[in-house]
Length: 237
Image 1 (cartoon, rainbow, N blue to C red):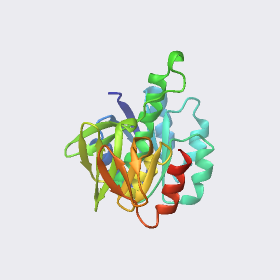
Image 2: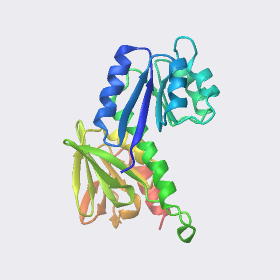
Image 3: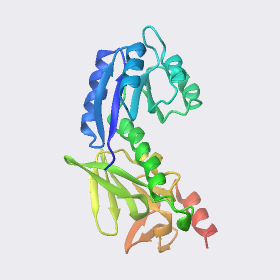
């Protein structure tokens, strides 16, 4: 598994505490340094190699964006800020993600998982298999993190604070809201068919006006989703 050496550039003690705790929960992240201002962080970046930087915008001495512009070869950057109005500016600087404080762990996890998708694209790139990229996420299951390839998922079921992700050969339970999973999967051939279910569109073997069938399991189509679901499935015929 790839390991990302992390540096936190943040002057708020509570934010540092939260980020430190989150980083320690993710096996492919390793915290190497905490800096309370950008000048000190610049010295550290020149002296050591870091793969990922969590960067606050409002810092003493030198602001986060000015600091970022001053770095020649920055690591991956995830912005952490209490102000949403700087999000657009941050993406123009090619950051990985923009996290609004207070940061929830599920949102943090979504951001750092983008690194895995990026590396997966690089590792799997092959001229003989042009355009073929296997994407995956790591999901918390108990005290371990389990890799799930997106092309293996059959459907996702909401169970209040948790979701059950089912593939051909296994099923895992992880603490996520279905809406958050929907955000992760929205561009990867998945379809929300019910308030409690997301289905892999290409795994649907049959459907009626009231349900879809995947791997011999009948999944209901919600009333508010019916028109969209049926129109998309009928278009594919």
